[in-house]
Length: 254
Image (cartoon, rainbow, N blue to C red; front, side, top):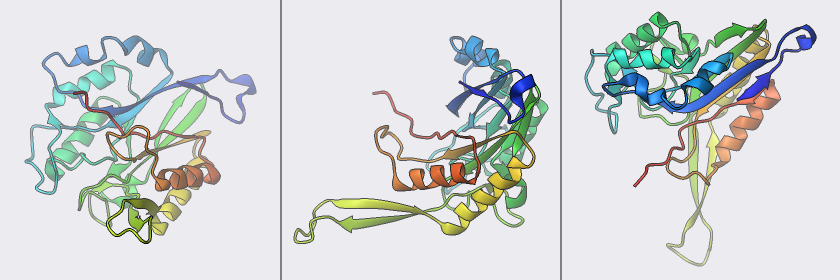
């Protein structure tokens, strides 16, 4: 958690933000998922996370997906019960069950009073921030994803999430050793970085605090930080973001 204070905070109370990573709720007793963390999450003024599951009965598995993360809409009630005010839906699972389930999930979250960023009916709507105001401080959340299956990105007239597309370059390290291990370099697509900068600048005009939340990194490898993560993080901060909250680099237990 952190204390977020607006520029005119001399007469305002601190606003405490609790933030978590990937959220996937799918169990018979959905509220039990937050049994040991609910008190911490609900104690914060604003609670934020990454909604990495579709919540819908509609839809069928997207053939582009490696797996399908989908649960009955009743599971989403656990998010509201744990105090989540806003989530990003920009990740590699938001279109796992197709467009019908995608829109149903947005509807479910809206019905629960949870603001959503990072995904929408088209790229323009997906780039709009989720804004939550508490204690007189307005906090804007912006969501992006570098972890994407083909077709998951939003576009003009196309549903999906805001992409941060990345080029990966493999360079032979030992020039005289064919087949030796490569150095891996990554670079974010320039137009996506430029769009992020514009988003942050516009969000700063609407809110006291701007939070950029990218779905990024090398999964199952907590000690690896790809080049583009630093590139994106610095660009966001330089543009005026107050906080960068990344997620995706989860660990599978044996």
